[in-house]
Image 1: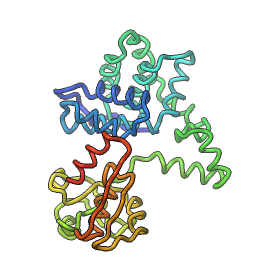
Image 2 (image 1 turned 45 degrees about the vertical axis):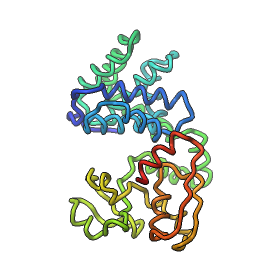
Image 3 (image 1 turned 135 degrees about the vertical axis):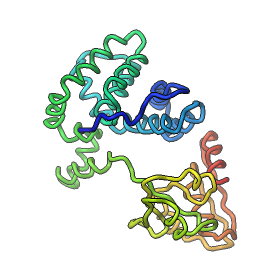
Image 4 (image 1 turned 60 degrees about the vertical axis):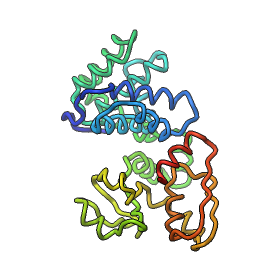
Length: 291
């Protein structure tokens, strides 16, 4: 729960990153769209610097991951009902204060600016959240595990029945950590050995021989198509299929394209993959990633 408060995400020129993040959260909450699609469309439609794009990405996913915890904190300061937009603004502000390395004055000032008619209320709650920080931590520490680790109560109960309370809590803790960055080298274009030499902090993943773990992802790798950002677990289905060069493969739920690209690699550029998805907007992203 505890985090530093040094200014890692300064306010910079261009579109407002917090406004962009709030808009993405509203779209995600009001639709059935996948979170990654909502974020992708939001970032495509904004003029944001790389630092502000990183801010939007971290805050967007962070608020979604920690909604139960953030609502618990909001209830501490405002037990009465809130409209949906004001609640999202408060979730965004509290996530910055408690989970991100954002200076408190910047988090409050910039977030209050989004609140419209609820500016006074949001300002008061965020300032109380700063002044009563240690008391909030104590309340969170004594809250039920599903609140502390921000998971649905029914899911925590199911896991407790199967794994015991300690196992369920450990799974919740792990499940809400930001994911490590893994890349799958495109072995039709680059070797793992060359990539390991190019990037500081890159290392062979212990989870899969075809993946690297990286501290910092060089944008040139993405632009040149020598790697694809992909969790090692997603490769397993392709390997169970075990496609052979010259075969035809149907990928019936293909977007955003990670498994499709890996299937093409396993076919060694000999064969064909028919890639489909039920959502037309996801096909655009699929084509971009495959290109």
